[in-house]
Amino acid sequence: MRSRRYLAAALLVLGLAAACSDPPPPIQVNENSITVTNQTSDEWRNVLITVNDHYRGGAPVLKPDGHLNAPISQFDTGFGQRWVMGTVIRKIEVTAKTASGDPITLNWDISQRKKR
Image 1 (cartoon, helix red, strand yellow):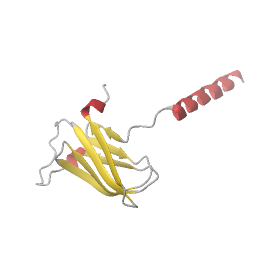
Image 2 (cartoon, rainbow, N blue to C red):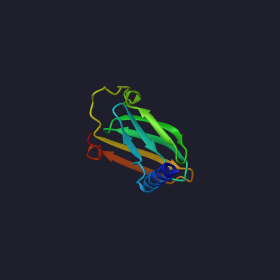
Image 3 (cartoon, rainbow, N blue to C red):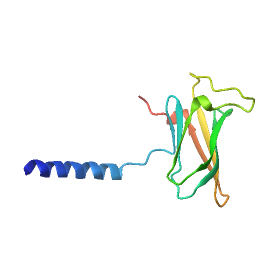
């Protein structure tokens, strides 16, 4: 009986810690992909992700609380040049519009990368 109380208390503490933690950043950079999270209650349209000022990718729609996981290998320039694996991601700009036409802009740069 005592171990159940400890288990219940531990689960409660973990739940409270998760509820009090900061939400993840809206732009997350992994080794081979970029994840954009719509943390608003509005649908985003014409989502464009621009990496290092030249490489682009995106999606037509990103739902509220939705995630866009974009493999960096699929990004290309306006001239059709593909992303070269091993290139350092230095900056990212995400642009979109809400359903009512309001602009959305998110920025990320290399200083926000988490140290491992």
